Length: 144
Image (cartoon, rainbow, N blue to C red):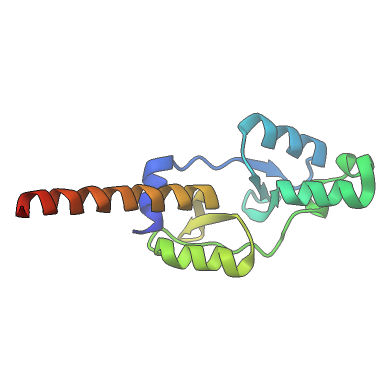
């Protein structure tokens, strides 16, 4: 299975925020959209970074509530690992495990076309396992 299959199922909505937005604004966006990470746009509108719930928690733990008034770019991850639609889900899982992150933007020709979370990966693997089990049951029934 490839990353494109996950995007086909979940959709390709990409939630973004400006690098100059406050951490408070980013936190409200994460809560309102019920997501774990947001893509941070640079001045030209491209990928500048990613901000996760974990980044917000670390910021507040280090600087208390004062962190909420500071810009997102102070706390975001700048070196963002991306994948492409042709990548296998197995390769994506390995990348996420090795890098210890839960969200990966999906790029095509330098543009973002979606974002995949570890939850999306787990759901796709469960769905795949259920389909395989059903196919095996059908095969056994037909052979008997």
